[in-house]
Figure 1 (cartoon, helix red, strand yellow):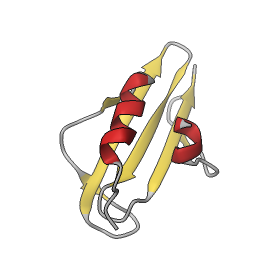
Figure 2 (spheres, one colour):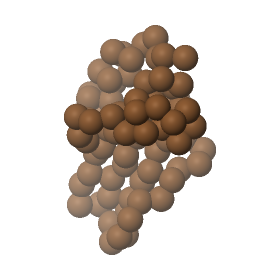
Figure 3 (cartoon, one colour):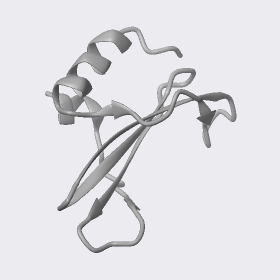
Length: 84
């Protein structure tokens, strides 16, 4: 199910400081289609990646805190609630 309000979501992410991490689409673990866009924000105190599948609508978020080597998935992440 494609995302009907993608422009609004991208506008709100950009307003919060997120940028599209790279121009390539990645494979979605749920539907196995190359349709995942990665939006990222990072700073000295941490960061967050939001991975949004344009095909099935699945959204996952990974966050990092200062000093962490990698990122950990935020299992309770809700994009609509996050963007307000």
